[in-house]
Length: 152
Image (cartoon, rainbow, N blue to C red; front, side, top):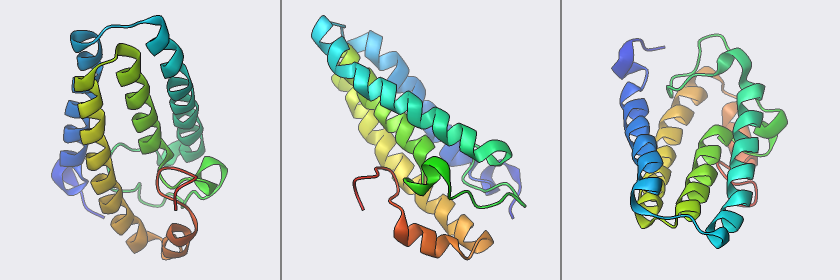
């Protein structure tokens, strides 16, 4: 286990925060809502919110923004984690797409794309750490897709 902001992966958290704030501000700052964009965005926003709540609830006391896992926390592979390894990251992506569509904002869409790239890299960092703590993670990783249940 590592300690300190940098050692625990704080740079990932800081970059993620910057992109999420950019995304949140870019929607209303660069786009506009129409009935059509609102209607199309709702499934993305609802699914993203559901995925986030499901992931949040399953993790319990093991929740942390850093890619460094909580020491002594069990490896969660049930609930939504039986379908996706990173439901909280996936939730952010579904919400980002929904937000971008809602506001019809290319800037928000670009921020969502950058967030995807960042979260893939952050997930890889997190998985290396999880494999050190939980040897069974290797098998779990083979069986369960990272972000989207329908993509292996």
